[in-house]
Image: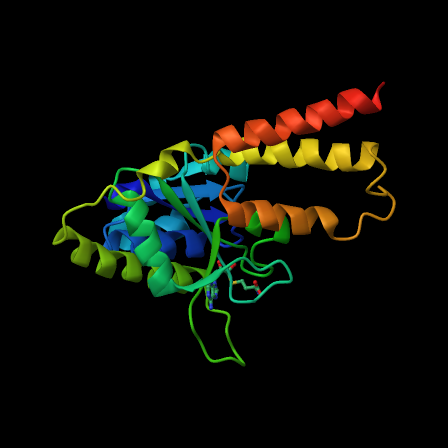
Amino acid sequence: MLNKIRIVLVETSHTGNIGQAARAMLNMSLTELYLVNPKKRPDDHAEALASHADELVRGAKVVTSLHEALDGVDLIIGTSARTRRMDLPMLSAEEAAKSTLDVAKVGLEAAILFGRERTGLYNDELLMCHKHAYIPTNETYNSLNLAQAVQVFCYELYKQYQIEKNIKATPNVNHMRDKASSKELQSFYTHLESTLIDSGFLNPDKPGHVVDKLKRLYQRAQLESQEVNILRGFLSAVEHKLKG
Ligand code: SAH
């Protein structure tokens, strides 16, 4: 069940953090580590800090885009210490672990995203997520070290896993099978933006936050593939009319 959950580190600067994150994962029986454009590929320092999780570091999947890391994923959770302008429903680490296990226990894939040491996840990356999760902290000092944040989430997942092991899996989230992939959603957003501009609704020189707000609306709706196809069909019809 836990091998259905990916830990995705985005543009990590320090290889030591990669090693410590790997150790945190293996302690909690998680093994699927994805590194999106790490500033430096995992090195000896990463392996030394990983301790007995050095194999996990060597087996990490290094990819060049977040889309690649999220390929085939049904539930995406973005972690952040800050509430953002675009915030989606916020879950505590414990609540996020429950949602994630609900997906993993019926054989679907989930990903938990962690941001850069200095700047966290960018808004457009958070907008690719279905949910945001935070570790409750001291309000005046809320940012944990990256590997320690990974540790807390992996611990919550492991705790929840222990509970789930004793409960028969229920197929109540099987409908997630039909959820639109992150690739389908990104193509839809690109199509939507160009139609908003072509129709004159959106001024490309002064776009404001309209597109981000619409993305947030659609992320919240957790669209299915078929629904994305309907929306794209509608956009194509509008474009066809515009071209006369
Ligand atoms: N200065 C950055 C903090 C980055 S810490 C910022 O303000 O966003 C590196 C990563 O650790 C974050 O991107 C997030 O993935 C995770 N993290 C740190 N503290 C967290 C918290 N309290 N809750 C959830 N994730 C946290």
